[in-house]
Length: 228
Image (spheres, one colour):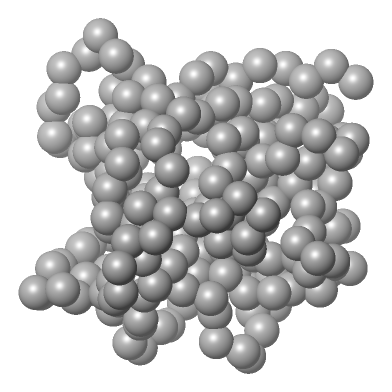
């Protein structure tokens, strides 16, 4: 599949390992950076979400998405992303992703408004539970574009090219391919969200790490079963 991701905001909080590790499925281990674990909240928008042979049709292929995630590996290799939830503004995409990608997608009412450099983003989850869950945030990019350096915390958090899913006792892995994120620092105004608590995660009181990426093109490859 082809997708274009744009106006990505990465918010990350350090969360105790002992709180996140029990939330993972069998076969995955929490990935840490210098012993620290992180949970991410990532709102963005997508366009052209379709098989490579299918033309872009905005009512179906363009929509907003927000995910709550952490970082994992399998037996010390294959670092990737584990999603606690994914909210999308397209009901068909939600149903397809839940069925074919075995990911915890939720249908939400979502909006994005751009005012100069600022992005106002809103989300209200509709189905399935846990509900209510919502997000209200205003953000903008600041500073120069600086791709993450290998070995840095920014690289650990952003440059992930595997995703994992789990259903009915079976672990799955999918690959994504894209250029390195054009990362910038970011600032936010008025964050209000309950997506982390809906996922069963206690959000720390400390302010998050904040990064922004303007856009990039992405290819998504089919899920494959992970053999024990």
